[in-house]
Length: 93
Image (cartoon, rainbow, N blue to C red):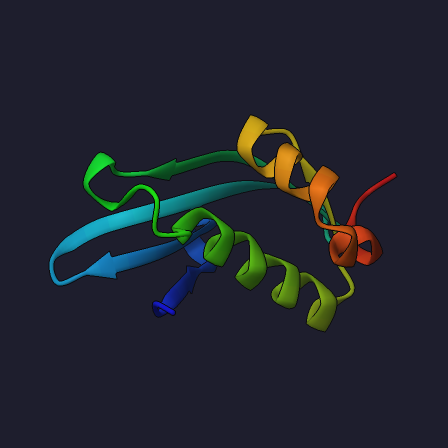
């Protein structure tokens, strides 16, 4: 597991590796109760390590703690939400 950081001011969750950003997921706030994941990027050198899943898990936990629903528009996030049924409670229908 990596340390996933959340920067609300920049509307992103990210994973640092020393001075490099290994992975980042950005979102748009549609309303106080609805966040839209619009982009997920894992740098090539860090692919295959599950970093994208760690970002999504961190956002799901944040959403649960704050009563937020998530609309995953980015193809990666959309695919993960379709395959991981445990995330259904925060998925915007």
